[in-house]
Image (cartoon, rainbow, N blue to C red; front, side, top):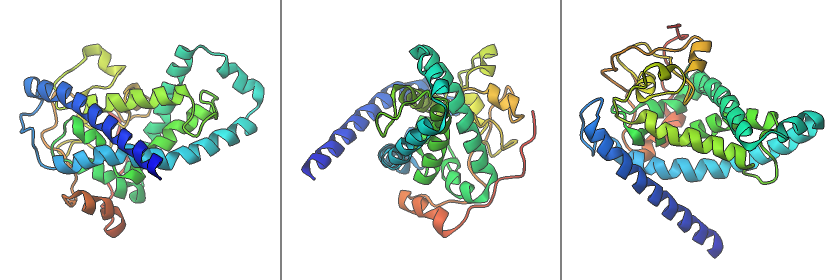
Length: 278
């Protein structure tokens, strides 16, 4: 018990250090290059700080067991010669392939979270933010986060890009998760950065801010790092201007505790019907 408590304290310390690094990087940038002028201590920042720790500690503990079991099953169900092919790839190729297939898995998990009312109850917590900055990346109900992360990791294991050696998986799925999570802070940031022609290849704050819009077309821009997936599936939307309002039509509670229980007590209204192509 003492050892487990010590491990938790170390994890919290590491998360606090990571949070400090994010603050040092993004707060000055958001002040200098803000897409929308706003206060640093904006509405909901206390809850988002709580989500920062919950969204890291709880989902990782919940998903490690199922992922380990999934990897074990897959490596016995899929022909060994197929797994041997991907296992022989160099690390860079495995990482690139894992990033693409995990993005496809995440895209559909994210899209279903908008289109299926039960999943939207949990995902609406993330969209309840009325001001979007880097810390909103962590505003996610644990159920929503576990579902999307599981769907992102499944294709990696199906293709043999991740190994079942440990419950948490091999280096490749860890790298893919680390890349997409880190990029998530950037695309949520209150930054007016645009990448020009590269915006079709890699996501930007503008791309994801339009996903959070309350002032324009919704049900668009589901990808986290690869916006061309939205072009492929007809859900891409990226005009030159920026959205003027964010949030959800339903009023969600402000406190962290109430938000965690909100999906169980009062279902959120479904988002608007099927997304339209750009």
